[in-house]
Length: 102
Image 1 (tube, rainbow, N blue to C red):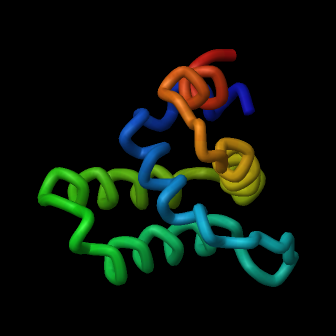
Image 2 (cartoon, rainbow, N blue to C red):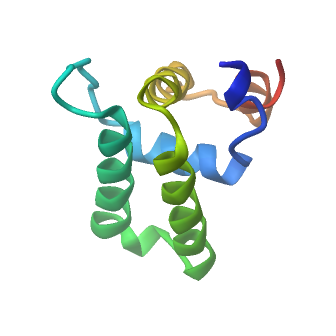
């Protein structure tokens, strides 16, 4: 988790949240968690594109590049941290506490 502290911007975390909001993640040794994240981001961009502007597409591209640089374990932790934020009263402070500080 320490390696991930400050790795993502708040905007990237919000995009991860959109990608995983209605997703149930099941750990599997056959599916790389990096691929799960990338495909989830691609799906949200493709099927919910009306919610995004050009800047959001750029954020998604950068986010995918960052995800591909993670180890499988770091990607798994990213999924767990993201899913821990799935709540209706989410604040920017929640994101900072989860992803920005050690």
